Amino acid sequence: MLDIINISKTFNPGTINEKTALNGVSLNLEDGDFVTVIGGNGAGKSTLLNAVAGTWLVDEGQIIIDGVNVTKLPEHKRAAYLGRVFQDPMTGTAATMEIQENLALAERRGKSRTLRRGITKQERAEYKELLSMLGLGLEDRMTAKVGLLSGGQRQALTLLMATLQKPKLLLLDEHTAALDPKTAAKVLEITELIVNRDHLTTLMITHNMKDAITHGNRLIMMNEGKIILDIRGEEKKKLTVKDLLDQFEQVSGEQFSNDSALLG
Image (cartoon, rainbow, N blue to C red):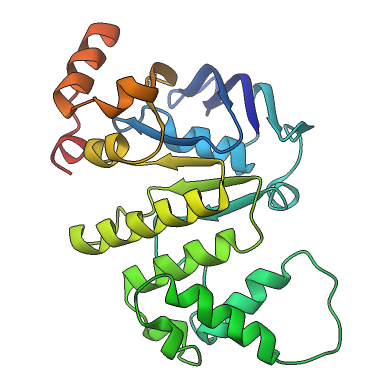
């Protein structure tokens, strides 16, 4: 579903601020893979996700989504293949519109528009059923303005909107980092539910080692713009934070020093 072939990205080349963010990264995601990506600050994990999304065009290499080479496509054209949830809960929803109106926008994205106005009775019933799955009581507040929701409620709604059309690839960009631990755990629970239900191929960037280990069927660790660990299957199920730190130190020859990742 996703083939990343030897991609590189350098910011500010030829200047004193030159920074190689991705250095010959290759990665393959099978249909239905749920991959968590962990790494310290500046490891390249967010640049990897932005490269896939088309926010940054890569200097070298190829990015192929479901057999389509999207390497040269701008961000807005790649959006047809992707669902994305950002770190900021305020991004991804229209605050002045109702919950049901936000869902209607997401459902009609990329489809031809007609002069018909409003939301049909059938659509309203579908949205109610979808929202009830979240377990947040939003199914009884469908006419409420999204700006009145808490950060966790908005993030859960954004997740629902991003997956409404079952994208080829779901990108989660530290989507629980701005939430308190209890709310973050709830959003991750909802994430797992939706990903498993719809068999979505997912790339989740996280700063939290425990979350990276707990969720998904595969864990990737990045350091200095490269993938240095790729753990999956039974090995991932048995993994602990200490195991991960030991493997990082063995492969990189240095100690992992990101406190927020360690402490969660």
